[in-house]
Length: 168
Ligand SMILES: [Zn+2]
Ligand SMILES: [Zn+2]
Image 1: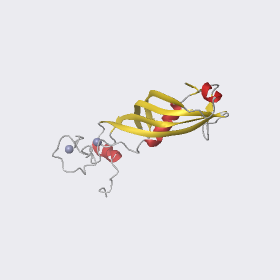
Image 2 (image 1 turned 45 degrees about the vertical axis):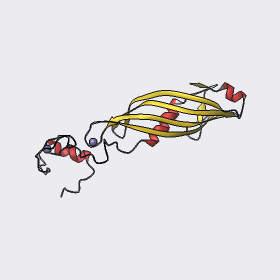
Image 3 (image 1 turned 90 degrees about the horizontal axis):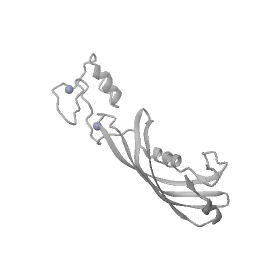
């Protein structure tokens, strides 16, 4: 919680703020993502009944590659520009709670907006073999690129792949 009583007493005067936190194991579009090493650096100032907070957020997103399922860590950056008002509803403005504001949910929201739709270990991830399930980035298998619909991995691979256009 950030105590903003001095900002309310001295409108227009900017005060620095730094905050470190982490958000563990959130479910985002079916993937489990943790945001760690979250750091916010910025400042805040009061104006009447409002307090404005702005600054930069950086974090590391820990999750899995959507293609081959290996662990992936991606740096995420976000900007924060928010206004806190007494009675704020969290849409146009966040609420002031007495002389304190809770920055963590706001930081979390800003980071979520910057997350990619899919996390990949690399842009040219080859994914898993649809026949034997081996990670094709790590080892070559001798499977002919699999049209064996009875294989249990073929269902998995079509879930994991956007490219279903080989199938008739
Ligand atoms: Zn991958
Ligand atoms: Zn294979």
